[in-house]
Structure formats: structure tokens, C-alpha cells
Image 1 (tube, helix red, strand yellow):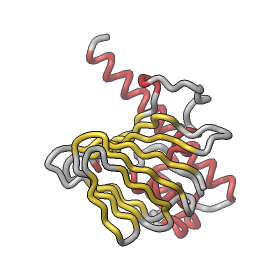
Image 2: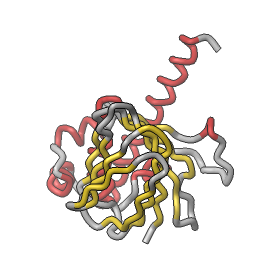
Image 3: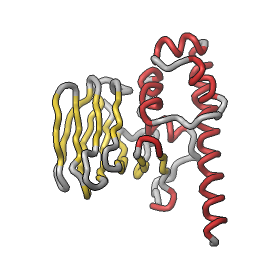
Image 4: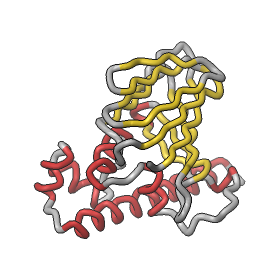
Length: 199
């Protein structure tokens, strides 16, 4: 495949995911009978940003999706799964959904996305040096996390008021009840896995 054709295919796939994600977010709000103003009040996201997001005029950041997932009581993986096709039992590497927040220096791969009847999922994250992804709270209180650094780093993980610095091979496990933050202090990028288990 020529480079320009490959870039066009990736761009089209990203546009398609953003469009489906926008439609799903609009549907979730409509299912609850909320106005944009009410959702803005619940999420702390401005009405204009929510409107542009639901019309697919902007791509959401990780922090923005995190806020909306908390309001809708979903993990980010579950929300992203809802805009994908029916997930197969075997997820080939080439078919794993990758979502990027280029502005934040963050990439997220759904290695083993959520599936009906299963309680766990596996996520791969890559943070560029200096990148930081904060979450105001868990989408579901008590969500179990296992964070395993695969390479690079270190990775700084803040859970509530406690900060943990993880090197390659280190694993941090916790139940999430409040805010959290993932940060790559550098000098290089960090690649890590997160296993999430529903409470």
C-alpha cells in the first residue's frame, strides 16, 4: 500500500470512529432526557464544547471522555466498544482499536475490549515524555485496576493523594474511588498495560 493511500485509510477510520463516538454520546444524553445545559452542569464541560463534540466537529480529549464516562457510569473502554462492531472472541493485534489524544501525547489501545458477560478488559497505554492524563473519578466506584509498566518510563500514577513511581516490570494494583492521574516524567516515553475489572 502506498504511503498516501495508507494515511488516507487511517484518516478515514479515525473520522468514522469520531463520528460514531459523537452519535453515541448524543444518544446517551437523549436516553437520559438531559439537555446540553444539564449535561454541562453534571460534567463540568461547557455547553458549546458538548454541542461541538456531539456534532463531531471536534475530537474528544482523554480528560473530556473521562468526565463524560463518569457522568454516564461507563469505563472509557466500554464507551469505545459501543461504537465498534461486534467484538470477536479473538482480537488480532491489527484489529485492536487505537485511540489517540495527540494534544496530550497519549495513545490507548483496547487489547481485550469489554464484552458482554466478561468483567475484565486489558488496555495498553503509551505516554510521551511530559504527557499527563488526569481523571476526576472512576466511571464506576471501586473499579479494580492493575497497572503494569512494560517498557520505558518511569510512569507516575497518582491514586487519590498517593503518588507511585513505576519502573519497567513494576505492577500497581488498586480499587479506584476518587481522582487519578497518569504522568510520564521522561526522559523517554512509557508503555504500560492496565487490567480493569468491574466491581
